[in-house]
Figure 1 (cartoon, rainbow, N blue to C red):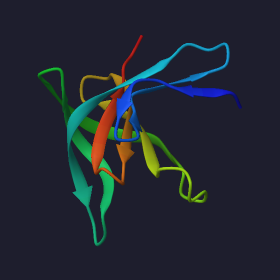
Figure 2 (figure 1 turned 90 degrees about the horizontal axis):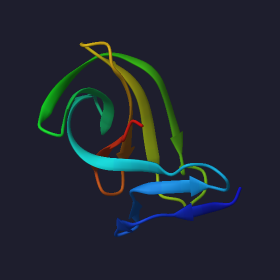
Figure 3 (figure 1 turned 135 degrees about the horizontal axis):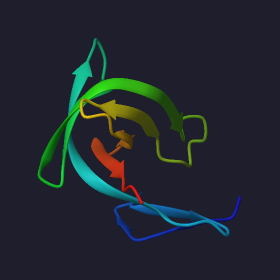
Amino acid sequence: MNCRLEEGFAGFPFGRRLADQKIMLFERIEATTRDHYREVQEICAFSWRNTQYQVNEILDRWHEGYIDPTRLPLRYFRVKTADGQTFIIRYHALFDAWSILVPD
C-alpha cells in the first residue's frame, strides 16, 4: 500500500492519501464518551464546527495500529446522529484526541 501522510502535528496526521485516491481529511472535535471500567469505550456525543451532535447508533467500529508497535493506535467509529447524518469518527489513544472525517 502506497501511502503519504499529509500535514499534522506531533505524529497525528490530519489526512492520509492512498495512491490514486482522494485525500482523507480529519478535523479535531470535542467528544463525550461512555467510559466503562477501562479507558474510552464509545462515543455518545460530539461537537464539531459549533454544532452539537447526539450519537444515536454506532453502525461500525474498527481499529488499526494495535498489533504493529511502530504504528500509532487508532480507533474508528461509524456513527449515526439523532438527525440521521452518518459520520466517521477517529480516536487517537496516544494523544487522547478525537477527530472527524470531513465529509465531501
